[in-house]
Image: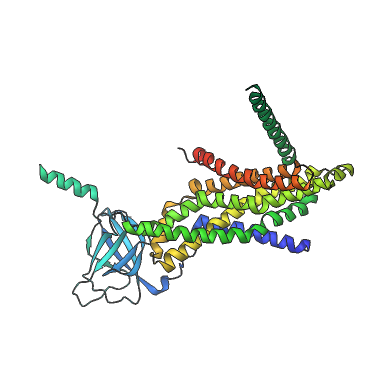
Length: 150
Length: 258
């Protein structure tokens, strides 16, 4: 084979190595990030988010309707402020809905479950869900149970 | 009894001698850095050892990733923690299976070729005629191969891991229906670049060095007959595969702080 061809192929090989390294480093391989156009943001404050992480799913009646985009600490109330990205086609969530942090199975990851309220007005981009229910922390639960015993 | 003892002594001395020769070959060759004038030799070797191994590496990586996802999913789904699938597959691939299996494939695909090539050069006395012409065979034949293995092996291992993770996501996410966000977020959350990916790369660099070293030495040290070359090629694959597996254990022991 021509030396020039070999040089080009080896160059491509090295480039593939660097690209692999970049993929391993940033680890967004295969994940389509450019989805945010079709979503709107809804906020919720929780006393404790437990093991909720960004990209945890948001579901209504067990159907995935969005994902957690951001979790930050509200410095005034010291509650966790969670930004959820809800798919744009799910646009009839009433304003008095409840957001609860639930666990997938006994050991599974956390996700947010939305229970729909009765109000006629619907959540828009930037709205906040008032009624929230924090993650159940197993240790606290056990602690409360023990306290009641004595 | 006495003869058994003598045989043991003979065996140990032989082993030490081989180790010494292999060590000095490596030591002498590794310092003959490929000069700019010799860059084409190195590039040709990277092509031979690295580029020609890409197809087998990528294919194996993909199927191993896919199988890991299948098996892992079946176990994890019992506990409802199938969202940890991505994390488990990625950790296993990046830290262990990527470097090790890529190293084994490299030994079989590239190491054996190096041994056979150098062995044939020795059998047909090309090496001694090079020396006669004042060309240093260590500089021209051995050093480029050692350096090429050193460069190509980590790239192959990285490719193996990436393709494996891709294969596992195809099976896990697209086929078995693990939620995509959880698959990738658990992975990103649990895999650390410095303490997992980098250590995997260190492993693959070591494997690349050891495999090409064994391959080059077996070729250089072969009996100059066709049987000799056959035996040397077999020894290369066997020794370097065993070396990769044993070294992997000790590297894991040292690097991951057990």
